[in-house]
Image (cartoon, rainbow, N blue to C red):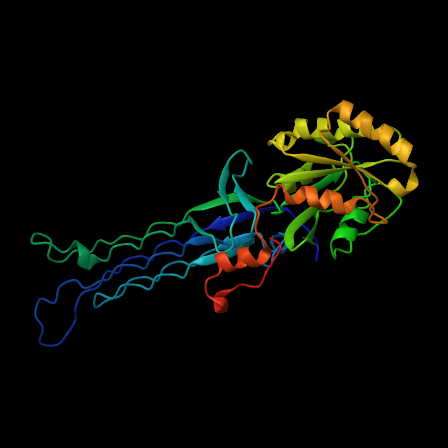
Length: 351
């Protein structure tokens, strides 16, 4: 499945059905009078957040969504049928933005969350509704209220507890493969990861979702490399893991480069708790690792972990530290609190 986190779509709710102009024509009934019914209501455009989706790829092939129009009224005071709502399923974490991307119109953060985004038009009045003591045979009617229409952007922000970031080739893919069942691509070149990856970490009876995003380089905020477009996927993380290659040219400079891009991006990313991990410990001796850790502490890191994503060394301590930032509940306890009826329990999904 291809990953897509932005899509532009066109929405149009259904127009109301027109009212009818009709008069009773029945044998032995004198002065039958008007009996034209009202038109039916047009269909609404409804967004619904569902589990099991983590991409907007479906909207690459379907960009136009139009709800049906309400049925027209008929004689014998028959009201036209209302049109069904058009329900659009989106992944949890999807935001609906205005066409200029300046305003957030909706934000779906929970499974099952629904929102009537565009209301269908009301049906028009039939001539029976115009009857009065002074207007015994009205012939006017209403055509029905047109539906609403607009272009919007969908933007997906994956929901994860922990975000993984760093420069390209810092070992992020190797790390997520080590702690989860994710099969992320690993290669000895920059930008091996081109799209965000999600994995579930199970540690000491606890579970949390880890998100890996493509590497950042200097100038990412201005579009260098892959840019900073994927940083939105870690905006809602509770804590960030900053991986730094111990075999790189200058780990302290790498630390400052990534944090400069976080500051340029904004959205509170620089204020989130950040665990700094010197990765690839198996490629350096302990003395060098200690020297680099001291440099990172001087550069602003609160605590530095020395790990090896390839061998798993030091990862246990890092995962222990992550648990302190997460809610103190096991997955079983959380499940029992949120799902009272076992038969109503939904299939688990990382988003």
